[in-house]
Amino acid sequence: MTLALSSMWPRHGNSLPFDHDAASGFRIGLMSNDSTLYTVGDVARRFAVTVRTLRHWEALGLLSPAQRSWSNYRLYSAEDCARVQRIVIYRATGMKLIDIKSLLDSGDTAVEHLKRQRERLVAHRRETDAMIEALDILLEDAMNDKALTVEEIGKIMGEADFAAHQSEAEERYGDTADWRESRERTASWQSADWRQNAERFHDIERRMIDAIRDGAAPDSERAAGLVEEHREALSEFFPVTPAKHYLISRAYITDERFRSHYDAQQEGFAQWLADAIAHVARASGVDTDNPVWE
Image 1: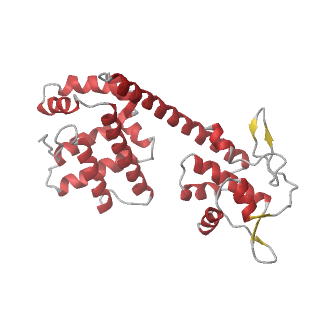
Image 2 (image 1 turned 90 degrees about the vertical axis):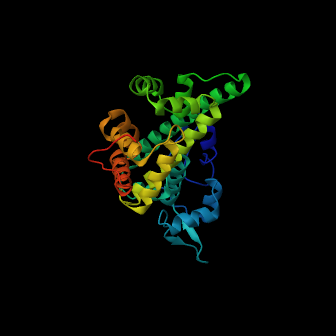
Image 3 (image 1 turned 180 degrees about the vertical axis):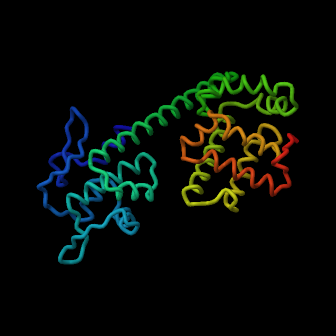
């Protein structure tokens, strides 16, 4: 991650107003007395982005270089360059442009921005490390053609408590037909199958978070479509009817482990998902006051 990001940062001695210290890493110190203006091409080259990208950010309101050359070309001040630098860092951590704009317009100090940037990068590094560990498991499995342990499945799924959850579920549901079917369906799964299943859920959850941030209500058509995708994903393990889906979803708000999983990604996510599933269940004829597992 450090090497990848390093190419985005200007070095001391270049024409942009930032310095670099080989021992301590890159510093974002803006020279307060720098009044030089830079062309859009200069800025694009120094931050390894395209001119088109800079213009796109300007159109979105992320950038607003006020200066113009005599021929009406955009000119970037040292302050504008500092803002470009922050956008590049936030984008490198996967942050959406609309969220970056809100953050940069919040009025936070440079120190607060730097702390937040570091937090984002550390979180991104943890995610990357987890992905590498999962890939190592996939590689070993592919080379050795061995059965996966519950702990290894948990790492692939990105769930540290997967083994404990499985043990608890088996104790509660081990004598049911759905549990037996789930075990039969997954008995032959390899690493790639578990990884594909995990990515399917992650994709659905990401799009649910997008819907929440866009203001979609739990009883909206958009939410209903995502709920159906979620139910179909669960049905890879055993047939999940709208009634079963509703009963499963109650744990999302009553079990702190589930609630934490969802709310850590987006505040209010667990409640939104539970409400959306309840709406679809009622629309499907489920008596949510007296639900039955069927």
